[in-house]
Image (tube, rainbow over all chains, first blue to last red; front, side, top):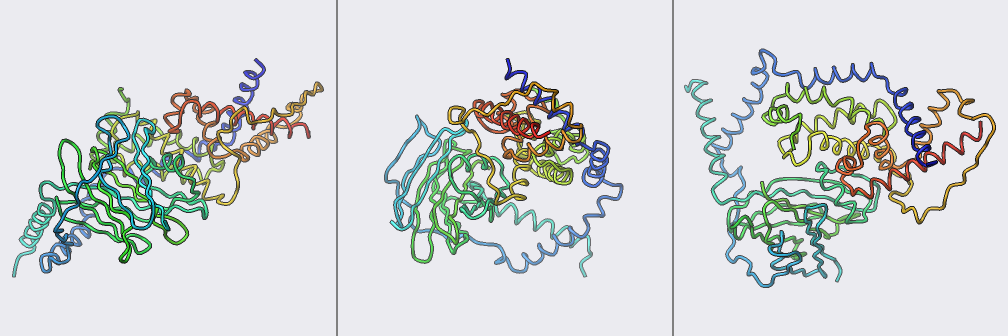
Length: 129
Length: 148
Length: 191
């Protein structure tokens, strides 16, 4: 009971503090300014704002057309990795299955957990082993 | 002399064509976030707040600094590599894709030394934290997210 | 779960600034007070509030509706405010969080039956005392207090907003109230 009265007192003090400390008129003015600056919608001549961006896109496209090597090309691999072992932590089927793990620098750790309804998998490499 | 409007149409057409060709069928997109974790300071500048609680609960580092983030588009059986802080190289290869899962090989290496070579079967969407390679004043943690 | 903001969210996800502006109008004060409750100063709360909405607008396409928009907004705002506070105070050791009740020693409570000191302290002095007491709390405890005592969220809503277990919510709230009460009791004895 004393605890309940104490909590009510704390709540009253806290609400009183926040209510008096808040400068509401300033807050509302800042909100309006923020809305006007960022979320006022498209002005009538809005499309013209994008002319410089359009010019830039066209320039990039022309450059790429001239020299396609500007784009990154992936290299082919000759031998994909082999599947060696499986390790399963959860029930069937687990969200992440470690088919293989190898490290030349030290031991490795695989940690899997149901964390807040979303399974999590951590693979950790310890160096200096 | 090509008229400006024709040039504009031509370049837009090329842009569309290049975009389509950059994303062939059977490509998987993985989002990678690079973090440096350390016990120096208390920076916490992750853009993805979903990681915040997970990192705080799982590790005891005081500082998590997001240094980079990017998408990697993986065509089947073609390796994609990226440079990481500390001189590391990160290589991802999509080996297979079926029944809502993807099979990827992830390699982290530096110079001639291989830090980890792992093959993962991940249910889409999924998250994997891959960490441990030391960098100056900390360690790298890579967050791999699938399902994009 | 029907979200009253569904239509505005849908339009915002299609890029409508006007629609998102309506969400800002609806929730700006809520986010501001939350940030203020953690940071305790107007400019910082304003900066965090505006950063939160800009960030949410950038990421609203990723909002899948697994929780209410308001809950998601609370969570982004709490994290942003706590991060801002940590940046301001990087080396300060804040009080421990989630302390088990069993580990704590009971506070010294002095019952003074003379004329109440609260009646003697003026209103502004009381607010200064409350501010001083709140400044001693960690960001997590400040967040718990503002969500419960001002926004009047249920414990379950707080758990969703903070991304923690229900037990942790209650433990943080209990600790924050007890700490606040201790500090105020001790300081009021000086009047």
